[in-house]
Length: 223
Image (tube, rainbow, N blue to C red; front, top):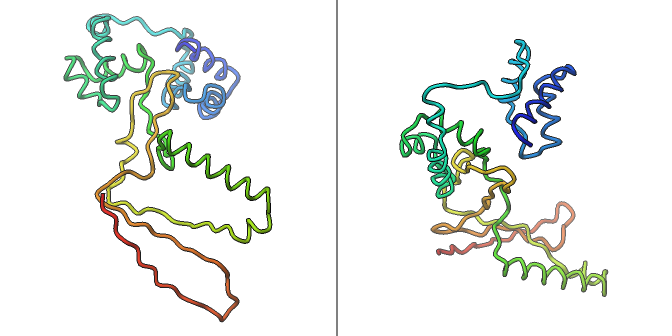
């Protein structure tokens, strides 16, 4: 949807008596990632309360128009495409305009937003995905052939890799994303200087007070 169309929807919900939070919820359910931010909705609701009728941008004069000329917009777009984690200050210094105009070009002209990368367990290669598919199909075939024997013999291990690195913050993972582009992703585990595999294997649970102990030694794997 165009910005003016979204503003018209905000105005419609405002006239119906919905609060800014309710309007945000409605737009999120309908537009998903293309939904405007809560701050934007709150600003327009406040304008409508003050009596604003139009959903078009107010006319601007002076330097802002020259700062959003085609040449400047193309420069900003090129910088962002080369590095989607570019900061407003960095882009402003490179192009020679204010950070406010950079933000306007990115959000209003190019219709982009800076989204945090979404956590996924691991970024798998096509080969790794194929291997997992083959293993899953093999396990399913064995289960269907003899369910009792399969469940008796099948062992799962709850384990995890403890990596030697400082995780990236949510703010650091933000990337400029155009309308319609998928949300950026980052793996929960990344390759680092070293890692340790920690896990627990249990065959049978003993009744109290019978207990047993195992001492498991985890080898350090360096890469």
